[in-house]
Every structure is written in structure tokens, then in C-alpha cells.
Image (cartoon, rainbow, N blue to C red):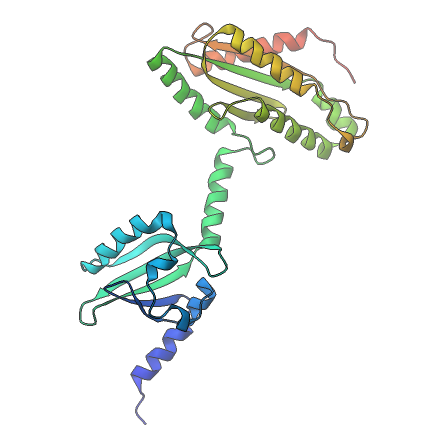
Length: 287
């Protein structure tokens, strides 16, 4: 008995886990496979006869139009990504493989949901440049931003300041209350530091209980002193009831200003670090 390959191919299309779209030259959807309902939340009969552009994320329309032109000019596009808006309002990231069928006057696309992959990629990118505990900029990204800020300061003949903070007696906190509490203290400190700076500034965790703050476009030494005073005041605020009897640990803040205390990153970091340790050495240890 001969096999009806045409009927079989339709059944096979509906078995594919990725969604198959057939769209005419006017962007009207001609056909979608069953997998499309899982992808976008619409049934096939809801999509057929409607413009596919109605479901695209508005911010991706221009890039998608360029891909459509490329495909309709006979160049297959097998690695294009864009976003669609689901029936429930959610956003799905899609990886497309598409080609134009000249004889049928349609473009055929296979769509794969890569939302989970995109989220994993973004998480990896974030972790590559941020401290996993506090979410602050890490040492690597801070170095990049300091280098960029120094170039801008040199070009515009402006000032910047680098603050180096160390939490006093933090070992006592960890030894007495445990590392879990110590981690919560570090996160609390991170949020307080973020409250003290502008969007153009950078707060980083350099490791352990050491933090840096990069203040850009500084107009005067008085402005730096005022910022240090503000940070010291915010850092001295009580930790709150969730920390029991633990009192807010004090901090030592070293300061280095460009260009007075150095004209490159290493010089400024060394100056701020040395200043911080001098301040730290003037106070008695507790615990």
C-alpha cells in the first residue's frame, strides 16, 4: 500500500516540538503547527489570517523587518532572535530558522523558545561582573569602570574620587553571630552604600568586608568630604530588629582623589587603601 507522503508530512510537522509558521508576502499567517499554542498561547485558528507582526515585541519590529527582507531576498536566516508577546501578556524569546519559498510565495519559519536559555545567559553575564552575595559590581567590572572614568576625567579635565571601605571588627561578627548573619550584614551595607550614590557612580565589593565607591565628576574636595560624611552617617544607622543584639559595625573609609593622589588606577587604589588602613590603625580593636 503506497504511503501518502503529503498527508504524512503534515502529521510530522505537528509532531515537531518547535513551532512551524508559514507566512505570505504580506506578513499574513497562512499556517502554524500545533506547537505554536505552547509557544504563544494562541490556537492555530486564532492566528491564521492575522498579521504575524501583531505578535512581535514593538522594540524588535525594526530588526525583525530587516530579517524578513533578507529572507524574502533569498537569504536563509537560521540564527535570528527576537521577542514575541504571548496571549497572556508574557514575553517569549524566540530563535528562528527561516527561508523564502519562491514557488509558493511564502516564507517558512521554525521557531524555538529560548527564553530559558536567554535567562541563563543573562545570569551568567551578571555573575561574571557582579558579586554573587551582594549583587554589587565585582572587582573586575570595577576596574573597567575606574579605567573608563579616569580616561573621561583626563579628557574633560574633571575630578573623581575613590573611596575604600573596610568594615571594622567584621571577624568578630562572623565568629560571634555566624557567617549567615555576617552575610546579611554585608548585604545590608551594600544596600546602604547604593543609597548614598548617584546612578553615574559605582559601588563594588572587592572581596571579604572591603568595598569601593567610585565618585565621578567631582567638583571639589569639600564635595568628597560631604559624601564621606553622608556614608559614615548612613553606615552608623541601626541594623534593625532582625539582627538581634548585634550592633552596627563601624567602618573605616580611605579616600583618594584624581589627580591630586594619583593619575592612574593602581596609584589611586593604593592611596585609598593605605589611607583606610591608617584610619583603621588609629582605633582600638573590640571583641
